[in-house]
Image (tube, rainbow over all chains, first blue to last red):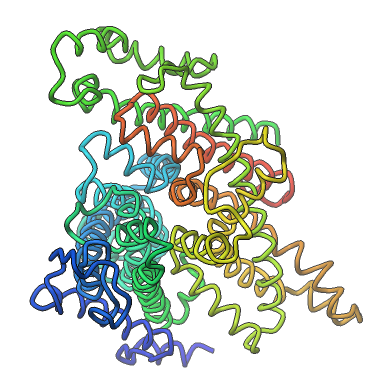
Length: 286
Length: 315
């Protein structure tokens, strides 16, 4: 029983390819690629108003038609990809940075600090991101900053709990006990021994949280609590489309598909990475 | 057992106090002058002063916090500045939409998820399992407000089976009121059902692998009966926890879906209050939302202790 396990540990880590990883990887690469491309090229200027061309169907003007201002839908979608990532990415990064630090500290210090962190994360969990966005919006005025903060706030307890959970397991390893016995500072143990061990789990979690962040950003911008116009966003495109639902139903399709494919891609990538990095982690952390 | 419940109740109260203090801090202390936020920068100094007096902003913050909590406990939620009526009346009207909507959504998602999850687990790696996995992956990725818009496109403006939005009120009769909630509830339920299906599937798989299930099969209990009598009841325990946690997402989703369908619910009230900068309403609604989420999770915890004796000794 022990022999194969030892081999698995000593063999250099190799990515085990699987279907979710490939499909998720392709969709995510596409999302990031389109978002980056939109910075240098879109078929039309996304914000250009062309009253003569308003509410055209697919292929009548541009590949997917135009909206109520005559703006090109493909260009709006491309620019929307960038704006979506520009909110989701910093939000997850901020939430992860704080959450991981707090989770590591809770695992290293245990005791009362751990208890406080867990209770505090219960408190934050009671606020859906949209509700936080409304509160932060009331405080700062709604806009991309409020959206980023609201999504980040939601991410802090998620990362704190996941980090604490896996870090606690690492702290039980024999070589950590040895390091402690040698008088190594808990901060150095966390940095040099714990974090490298839990990085895989955290990367997987970040990928899945990024998917959730894109979904939340879309919801916030649908409500008008995200990216400000005239900056295009997928959520706002859907809210505009709803106004013109009977005249131009096609406008309600593309932005939704874009959101769903982006979220699906990141979720699959997360699942695929989880299996590829370490099959034993399959059922952990969910 | 009683001591455990008492200690859980104590931690519930502490959590509620912390949540209310956080809301108070964010909405009343951090802004510096809430009156200036509510009236905007163009307000005249005498109107500002009048509002400050009306809100009692001349009193110190801890006193205002205690007055707010004390009022909430007595059912006095303050007066909304935009509606010029008691917030408690506003909230009571809106709850009559949001609570039925959320319950209907949770019911629908459970009715979809449990059969699908059990089916997928029973036919592991078969065609049904794969189909269910695809449903759950896609379902999680699709935003509920987009499903709402597609439903309006298909079932309201297209087929004309359901209203495209609005709510006639319960006084218009049970039928029409329920009809107005069907599309929003399904829009809210589908992404939740996708999550719940995954949880049900993995919980069922865990139980299927357990020794007592193998014993039941070995002593000749038919497969269907094993599933019904031994597997499903045990698999439902983790499903119930997730259901409690999902309430937070259902509420968050309700804010969106109520806006898609123009439903006069609590979420829409909060959203409109933000547009009108009515801090009194925002503060109360946010606390109410959070309190319901915390209370439901507390009840799930207690139900657990009652249902599963093993947890009592572990806790």
